[in-house]
Image 1 (tube, rainbow, N blue to C red):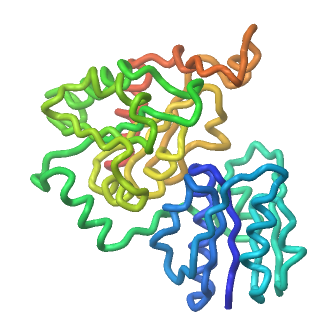
Image 2 (image 1 turned 180 degrees about the vertical axis):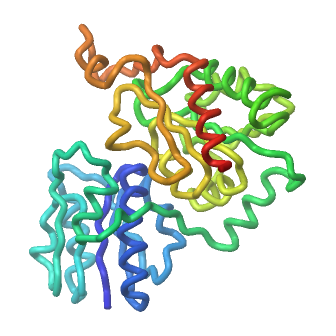
Length: 318
């Protein structure tokens, strides 16, 4: 049994779709998987059980990337083609079953909406797969001496969603102070390749003797393995936030010009805190321009984020 799974170019959306793969693997443990996704998301599936291959789709003019994908999969007889990109490519492939997601416009969480494609009784929680080599690589990043680690994700794919770096650092200092929830904790800063400049302000304001710069240095499964060694994660609405939640670490997402009810971190030990301005208030402000990289996160105070972090910490410990 062979399954073709076509998912997002974006890291966050790809991670949110992993619950469907996990459900299919549980139902069909002998099925073989081929994944088609964008370059940023390819590492999500590196350790997927029963993986045949990952086809990385580089976007090309005139949608030529779909033609390239078709040429690579057209000679296979598929048991299921699951297309989360709404391309309709499954109609031109030999397949016993086809499922295509065209987008619903729903305000329900994306995990719930995606789970409805396979008519699952329960939402399919995202997950990250890691191998022993990723665990070993993560174990070398800091000593296993019982000292807690606070993980920060101060980057995002759009400047409008980025909380100022000095506020991340101030929040981290408060939470790791002697009277904080994670006294004297190490502070690990995560980010993807090319995001070093976005994380620099946070790193500059952190105590150097306790900070660990991991921005752009790890593949995604190793990031997940490292997250599992952390006590808590705080980050902007981004793919890393979803990766942290899928890795099982208590995760607080910071929201402003995006909807937490649709894209908040998923899981029992997760929460979202947003700016004092609602999504609607942000996007209806005079001069709002989605092409600008000016932050729309300034009405989220450090005090408010600290209260949310402390509340989630207490909840996750119960």
